[in-house]
Length: 265
Image 1 (cartoon, rainbow, N blue to C red):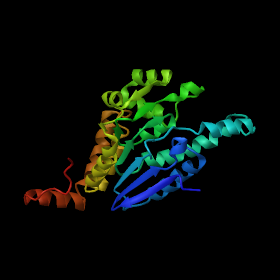
Image 2 (cartoon, rainbow, N blue to C red):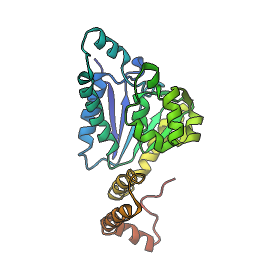
Image 3 (cartoon, helix red, strand yellow):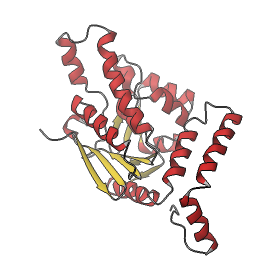
């Protein structure tokens, strides 16, 4: 049996590729466990500088494994909410690990990102799409509520009214509409998608890991905290950054008219 995830590393960049395209990379038990174990290890990896998440063979992720869900119902393994809660908690455990990684998480969506697969995609910091990508919060079609943290991420990206429309209708967004409403940042031909994600990751490995981690943590709460609290967090974070070796080297390079280590293009 092949591994559901392929993990490759180039310097400080790790790439996670979902490798079950025959099932449209549905979140099988093996894939869920693979994500959990991989992200658990990466969450304590101080050498990690960027993460790329993608699918395989023109498929990102179709979300929950509906065939397994049906089999569980037929086998009498699901009789009440108490049978579902542990699975949801396991999903949330590794999604939090992905969400909270203190490095850039770049998601390259080629093909469908549906249901929990959409939630997985929106956990990233930068989302790129191919011209054949599509996005769908399809839960209403099977009598379920959105999961994969979509109640948090989608309204913040597209606004509450648009998020509700997508939740209520389960309609499919093509790549260009997704870009226009803020779900993805860029759209590329399929053959250019992963190279673009890799180029972004390579550039970001030159940024300050400390500054990026603090920026990510604070900005994640920027829509729920008041201005004074954010100013306090800003002051504490800046005190850390402006006394770091990275900052001292950066201003030294600036005064000597040397190119900066990090200059995103």
